[in-house]
Length: 207
Image 1 (cartoon, one colour):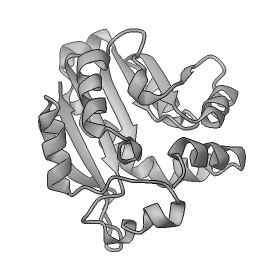
Image 2 (image 1 turned 45 degrees about the vertical axis):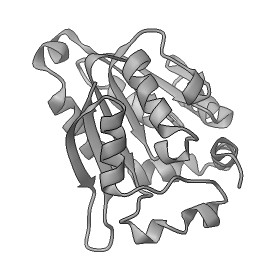
Image 3 (image 1 turned 180 degrees about the vertical axis):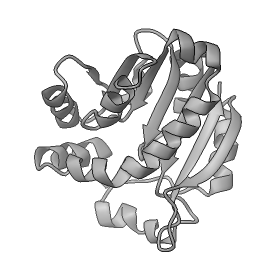
Image 4 (image 1 turned 90 degrees about the horizontal axis):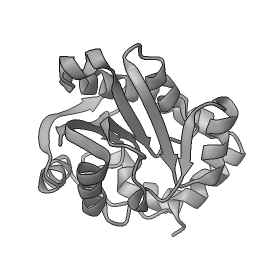
């Protein structure tokens, strides 16, 4: 099994990041809509800040930056080629090439978003604890989506197909893990669910 950052770095080098963006966009739209509904109105009015963990080519950072009430959006990714792609597309943006488990934002933020990243981490609970303690302001919102989970049977052979270790958890186990890290789980739903696709398992939680 290879490190996920190596695989995704190679994908960025051959332009596969564009396909990832297109494929994930419908789910991310639903997740961000739900997340912003949970941020208190006072924070929205004064302006909210956000981090996209595992930002890829930066498309979610750019999406957040376009929101009229977003004062700062930051991207961080462990794959250097992805960060370079983000900077090519958004030279003025704030992107960091860092190991997610060892990095903290320059200042704590109101929203942390992550799409299709968490199950690649070696210590998911440790990362969630770190996000709650060092990334998010008190009452801040964590919003993430995963397509690889126990109930999505089509995803169970992905580790073998991609050649990357993935932690396989059920919907209930994901919720319990978030709660164990000290978050209040606000919403659990399947984004972009269709007749042929069980949807992205999505969780919105408050620090």
